[in-house]
Length: 531
Image 1 (tube, rainbow, N blue to C red):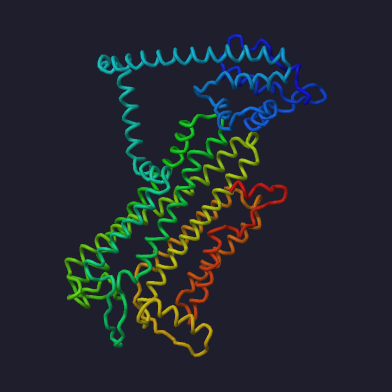
Image 2: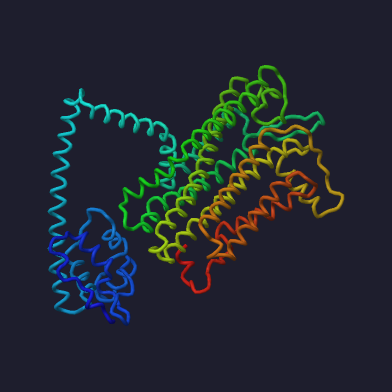
């Protein structure tokens, strides 16, 4: 390989530490191939340097890409003797004399870096002591007022962002904690329904039909919280933690891990009003207000403004569950429900922040990032964002199905769907009567669908997936469109169940492999392995 011998800076490292010398050599392209005029074709990047190290030392253990990225970043990380030897060979173009000179210069620079770090630690320790001293001796000075004012501003910012930071911490760590809590709490509610006797309960309608309204027969309380919501949280956590801890640091390889996490927290904190608004709406309106209007108020005035379900069963059969027991159980259930849906909409807010931050970061480093990193990161995020969207629409479909079922003349939800499906293929099938009793669930499920569609489409536009994976994008949008249409048409006509049944079956298959496996783009045969 033809190397840039004329561009080797022999005397540049006399006073520089390792970080400074390394930055100088990589930015000058020392050791890079040269063009016809003797100039290096480009500066070093982590990927190019990693490839060069593997070429000059094919029999060695090599240096992983993450270690090389740490060399490029502005941090306290140095370099070991073995890696100095390999790096000197790269900069020296495998020329023995030049390599030896670079090895000596790099070793001396590493020693200067170690000495500088020790000096900084000593200075920081002394400064900390001085600050503690000033804290108790400068109360009467103008500087003290400035420090106190700055501290109060920081506390004010912390108070504003405490909710957004607490919520983000649940999605930026373990991918099992929140899903496990959601699943476990749903299991506890299921056991409580057994203790209160409403897990499998019926009541006789005015038409003489025995209608099933048991808690375990309600898919919007069982399947939703036992399966769909935990899976949604799992994939949302994967996206947030991947972007926060891995992808962002990989793209911005010249910054430290602490700087990356701090910058990400700043992005989240800009949406602190959204988090407080979600908390207010979910707990006050969707939780407390709906619980009082749907469950508590009817117990005292005896009115049944909505279709009877397990939460109002005591008005029909007080011998099964008493009014105090109903208040306790419904209170726990609605508290769990509003907590889960706050986390649901907070997750969508965080996914919005990821898409926005992704676009902003790429605009900052557009000239230095590699297309391979961008493609892999884009595919990883959009596949999981798609899964979140599908699972979210499943949640809305179950909410609407249960609400429509309670308004029908069928005896249980399974029989209702089977009879409706039969009517789709057999002329003259059962025409089930729909009553006018509806709940807030219709409106809530619509908000869920609209929020999901907005976050997904925003993510697609910000991630630029259409330029890289046009075929899978079309397939994903088609699947989401089919699911959304099936949600809208629930209960609209006899035989409607054939549409959501087919759409959900297709979507379940697509959940396993989003885009139906059409992720290999021309000239990118390794894209699939990066996903």
